[in-house]
Each structure stands twice: as structure tokens, then as C-alpha cells.
Length: 93
View 1 (tube, helix red, strand yellow):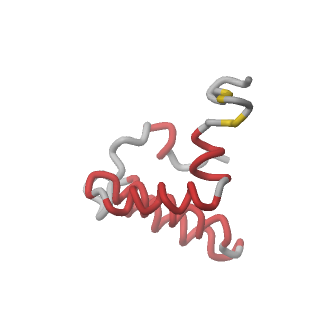
View 2 (spheres, rainbow, N blue to C red; view 1 turned 90 degrees about the vertical axis):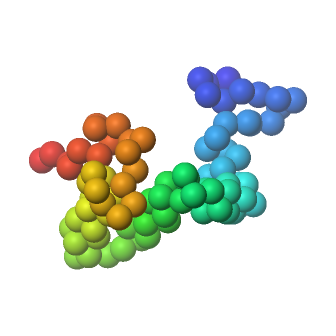
View 3 (spheres, rainbow, N blue to C red; view 1 turned 90 degrees about the horizontal axis):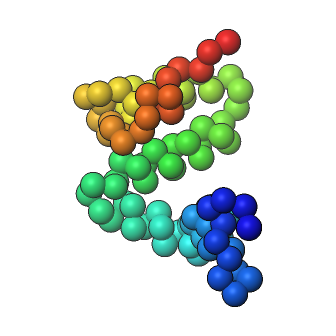
């Protein structure tokens, strides 16, 4: 099995399969994030990234700026301090 994809009786037990690819797993994990104060910002970030992926090209720059100020900037309303500097760096190029 690829790294991070433990097999249990032939069933993929990776985070991605359980909490992203499977609708019920995704719903339950999102409810868990939103219901725990220490993880609420992570749940909100996930929702906003999914919305960003669906927005029109013309809206992407403004949407990205809102994401950066809300989640990636220390002191932002829902700063996600657990993210690495590489994850929150503005894109280059």
C-alpha cells in the first residue's frame, strides 16, 4: 500500500479516503471540526478552500486575499497557526 494508506481487510483507511472521498465520513469529520472550539477555524478554512476551488477565475484573487487575511495572518479573525510557513506563503510566479 502507498504510504499513509494502511489496508485493513482490503479497506483503504487513509484520512483522504475516510474524511474527504467518502461523503458520510466527510460530513461527520466536518461536524467534528465545527463542534470543537479548538478546531473550528480549521473547519471554516476547509469550507472556504472548497468554495475558492469553485469560484470563477475573475473572483480568485479577491477570494485568495480574504483567505490569507482571515486564516493565514497572525491576528486574523480565524488564524490557523498550526499551518506551516510554506503552506501559508503567497504563490510565486
